[in-house]
Length: 155
Image (cartoon, rainbow, N blue to C red; front, side):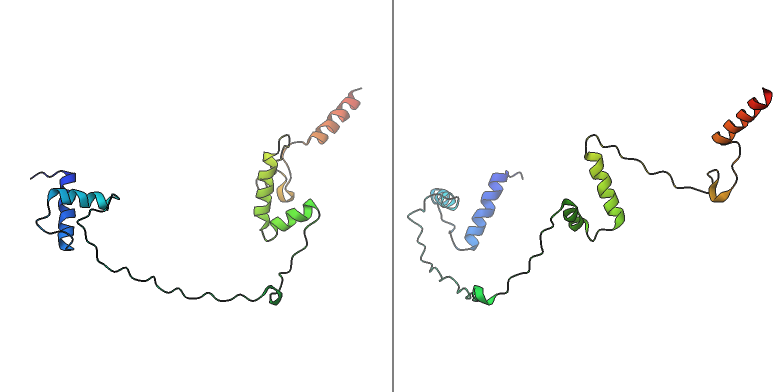
């Protein structure tokens, strides 16, 4: 059996109204249409006699009285920072150093014309001269001195 969505809604609605005692089995289609129109916000049909009593609204508990303004204590105000450094210091107080460094790095990157330096990689045991180890080969200054010595001997 196939039933359209609209027909199913109408059947469910009619059964609900019957259960609630709002309509009887003998309600004509005109009255049903009038009732549906009323429920959807239309004009109330003349044949509906609604003698229900509207209850009084519930009592609302009274609000507590506030003390007069002269009985309250003013909040202490912190003095306004005077310099930009003080203002920035107040903003970042309580942050850990890594967060502060990352924050300032991000700010510097957004400023046009400012170039930031990348940190030098940390020295490892594998870099030449680490922990006092000798370097293999010549340093530039040593090489220049050696070339000068050889040139001076040959002249």
